[in-house]
Length: 165
Image (cartoon, rainbow, N blue to C red; front, side):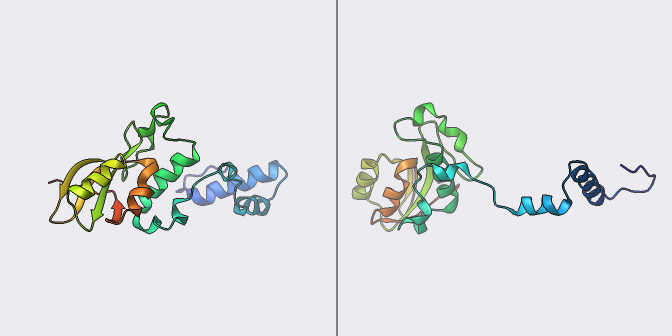
């Protein structure tokens, strides 16, 4: 490296260091750039997965929820093993997942009455709060039932939303 009392332009210095390292290793910077442009091999592609984005109801589920659930599926989390897989570690700043693998969700519904409540609880949805004036249900939905709940006739949209009643 070159030492100087002048201000350092780190981008150029880093690039020169990279070029020196590449030439010492017998490769050119062009080779390294070409290798960097090749898409990485993804091991997860070999694991069977259920793509939420390809399902007919995916448009009803917020992408932040889809990403978390997709990652859980890719990592082999199932309803049978969710309690031992530390599901809460899948939480993000936008999506909260509890230890039982339930996702904190705001469900926008067309109507909310005892019938809708019964249907949701049948699908193991735990309702925290419901606002019948704005047709919003704050609930915990098992990660493997998001698509099922989104497909229900009364569900217009599933998303994560912080709100207080």
